[in-house]
Amino acid sequence: MDLLEYQGKQLFARHGLRVSQGKPVTNVQDAVTAAAEVGYPVVVKAQVLIGGRGKAGGVKLAADESELREHAANILGMDIKGHTVRTVWIEHASDIASEYYASVLLDRSAKKPLVMFSVEGGVDIEEVAEKTPEKLIRHHVDPLAGLTRADALRIASEGGADRDVVEGVADALIALYEVWMQEDATLAEINPLIVTPEREVKALDSKVSLDGNALYRHPENQSLSDSENEDPLERRAKEEGVQYVKLDGDIGILGNGAGLVMSTLDVVSQAGGAPANFLDAGGGSNAETIRQAVDLILANEAVRAVLVNIFAGITRCDEVALGLIGAFEQIKPSVPFVVRLDGTNDAEGRRLLQEAALPNVHAATTMSEAAEMVVALAAGQSVGAPA
Ligand code: GDP
Ligand code: MN
Image 1 (cartoon, rainbow, N blue to C red):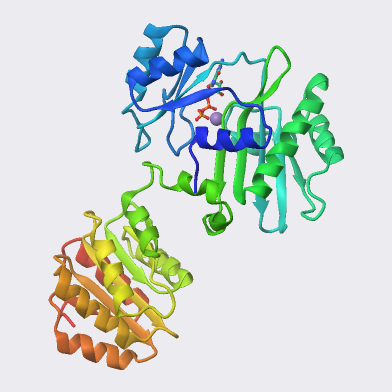
Image 2 (image 1 turned 90 degrees about the vertical axis):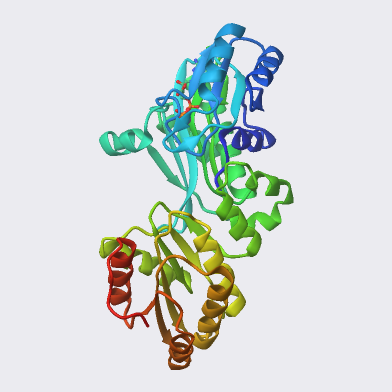
C-alpha cells in the first residue's frame, strides 16, 4: 500500500523526523487559504503515487498569491505519467544547502533490513547506484539489535555527510528506521533529505509503502488506504476480500493460487497478449467466489477476453464450473472465455461446462494452449469449435 508524499510525511513527523508544515488541498481557493497559513514562499506539490513529479512540472515554488494561484490551477488536474492530480500539498518552502538521500527497505536475499544513504540526493538514485556505487552507502541491520546510534553515525560520516550535520543525519536515519519497523513499512525513502542553510536536516519528500497484510496492527493507518487515488476496482476487490491487481492489458485472468496466476500472466505475455489484471480466487474457492471474481474482471471495460486457469487441489473443478455457470446466468458476458480446468474433479467440471453449453466459452487442456487461444480471441480471431 503506497502512501502519498504528505501522508508519508505525517508518519515521519510522528516518529520525530523534521518535515515542513503544510496542508493537502483539492482546489485553488483552499490552496490560497493554506498558503496564507503556512506562510510564503510556499511550494505546491502534486500528490500522485508516482515519482519524478518535479521533472514533470508537478512541483513549483510560489513567492506570492498570484504565483500560487497560477501553479495550483496548473497542477490540479494535471496528468503525470497516467496519474491525474486531485490533491496538491502546500508547504512552506525550504532553503536548501544540500540534498541527500536515505532509505530503509527489506533486502530479501540478505534476510535483513537495509539502510541506504548518499550525499548525492535529489536525483535518480538508481543512476547513483549504477554510475558511482561508492557514493551509495549500504548497511544491513541486525533486526534484533535495530539500527544503533553508532551504526547511524558511521553511515552518515562514511557516506560523506558534512561534519556539522553527521549527528542530525544519524538522528534522521534512526527515525526513518523506526518508521519502517514500527509502522510495518516495506519501504521508507527520503529523496531529498535536505540540509538547510541553518544546518537543519529535514525530509523534503517521502516515499512510503506499508505492508497491507500488517494493516490490522495499525488501525490509525487504515484510513490512508481508502484515498481517492486507489483504483476503484482494486478498492472493491479489497472490500470483497479478493486478491486483485489491475493491469494495463485487455485479457482478464482468473486463477487460483498466487503462483499459478503469476505464471499465467507470464504465459499470456509470452503468447503476445497483455493481461488486464491479476486475480487470485484463492485455494478452496467455491462457486460464489468464482461468480464474484468474474463480475470483478468484467467490470474493467478494457477486457476483451478472459482466461480462467484453475489447477485444483483443495479447490474442486466442479465447484468452479458451477460458479462460472452461475456467473454466466447473472452477468451474460459479451466477451469470449477460455477455460482450463485441471486437478480435483476436473472431468466432472468439464462435463458440467459442456452440458451448460455456455455461449463463447472455449475449453483448453494446457496452459500454453489456453494462452494462445485467449490471445487470438482478444484480437478478434476465431479459435475453432467452442467447448
Ligand atoms: P519528486 O520530483 O517527485 O521526487 O518531488 P520532490 O519532492 O523530491 O521535489 C523535487 C525537487 O523540487 C527537489 O529535489 C527540490 O530540488 C525541489 N524542491 C521541492 N521542495 C522544495 C522547497 O521547499 N524548496 C526548494 N528550494 N526546492 C524544493
Ligand atoms: Mn523526490
